[in-house]
Length: 90
Image 1 (tube, rainbow, N blue to C red):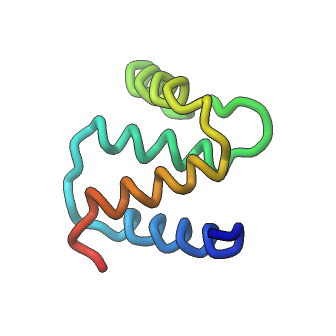
Image 2: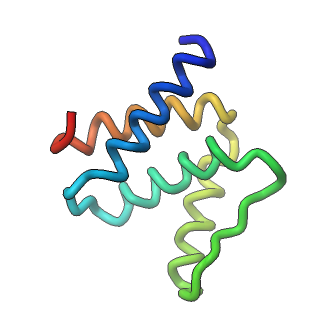
């Protein structure tokens, strides 16, 4: 898959994930979050924002778990996760 096709597939997956009505388990949401942030945040290390220190700690842990991936690998994994778990939207 070339970069342009990957970007198109990634955007479609993001739209699909954004429009789902499914209530996904927290661990799946964290995986989606981490892969999305790694795929889209290109400068330095991303620090989670929000007012809940506990939630931010979980997000940071999820980011640490995927930090070994390249931006392209993160996009591919994000697409695969969306396709696997979000089945209410085609």
